[in-house]
Image (cartoon, one colour):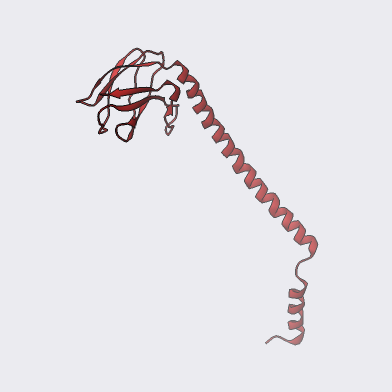
Length: 159
């Protein structure tokens, strides 16, 4: 059992609380620690974002050198024959149905400069369908996305 004197000391301890000076120092310490964590995380986040955006912008500048020509279309085998008339490697293509059907496909097939390849599509198309063929480049890196060269696209009419 607690004596009256001890009980009074315990009650006084809880009534006093911590002094305003110590509370202020603790609050300032918490703010400094949290601010440091946010700055450390933010610096790494912004650096990583800038590197990715820089790589994508670099690839978009390379898009100016892209020049493709559609050599032919085989409706039966669903193949498009493409020639790379530029000096840069094209890393893939994006096919998108504009009219006469629906669908889109990413084709990861490299096309070397001054070479011709066949790329296949799997769309079901009606008569007078149109497919938008967008050449794409891939920045260096393992998980880098394809960068479409939208200003170099070709619309293919399939009759």
